[in-house]
Amino acid sequence: MHISNYEKMLESTVSIVLGYLPKVAGAILVWIVGNWIINRITRIFAKAMEVRELDISLRGFLKSLISVTLKVLLLFSIAGMLGLETTSFVTILGAAGLAVGLALQGSLSNFAGGVLILIFKPFKVGDTIDAQGKIGKVQEIQIFNTIMLTTDNKAVIVPNGPLSNGTIVNISREGTLGFDIKIEIDSKIDYDRVKSLIIQILEADERISSPKIVLFKIGKNITISIEGVTSTDAQVEVIGDLNVKIKNTLYSNGIELV
Image 1 (spheres, one colour):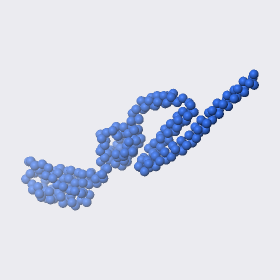
Image 2 (tube, rainbow, N blue to C red; image 1 turned 30 degrees about the vertical axis):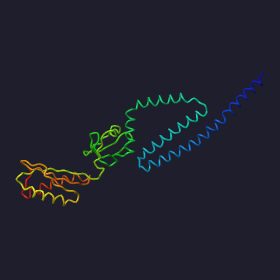
Image 3 (cartoon, rainbow, N blue to C red; image 1 turned 90 degrees about the vertical axis):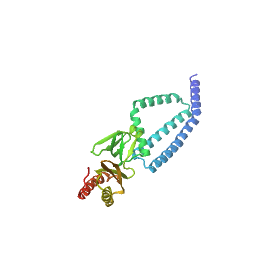
Image 4 (cartoon, rainbow, N blue to C red; image 1 turned 60 degrees about the vertical axis):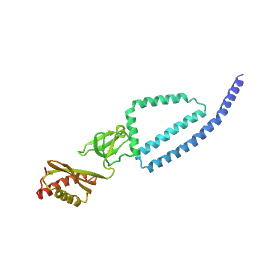
């Protein structure tokens, strides 16, 4: 009786193993082929990110994220092939993901903003931007924050979430900036003479293009608008130099500013 039961148990075990063997072999084959396909996808994606010149840290993170996500999906598919119940695992994974998402809501928003900034590049390192009430040169674009340096040498750390959703003025993107200097003279002074003196100053400065003098306002005094275009880096210096040169030139010609 003992031997008979043993034989029955052995026969049952062999039957079960033989029944699962094709499924296991199929699962192994699917794992091998699936991994090969995932590696191909991640390499293609990495190449596409390299062509778009995405930030290196973002490339590595996104490549790993895609690889892990696809492998998790592959494991769920293999578990289903083997007849394992995957519904409970999906429920637990979803609940855990929801809990983590709620706990890290602000950080995830900043992360998503950082990804969008690095992908669409509304600005890059070295650009001067006006955003979130701050003006400064971008020093570093991180996954969660962007670091700017203001003109008074203060480091401003701006969260990427609000930054990516707000208005961004990229001051240096075009490489040039316009300027508009206004001066006032007595209405009795010859405007054409003043205009001629100022236009000579503008045309003599190689840093300035498209110079223009506009009679802005007429009253007891005349308001003159002095306009032009210069490089982004030189704008502040050009405005300062023009203020000094215009004042000195007019004064030497007997014309005083109001």
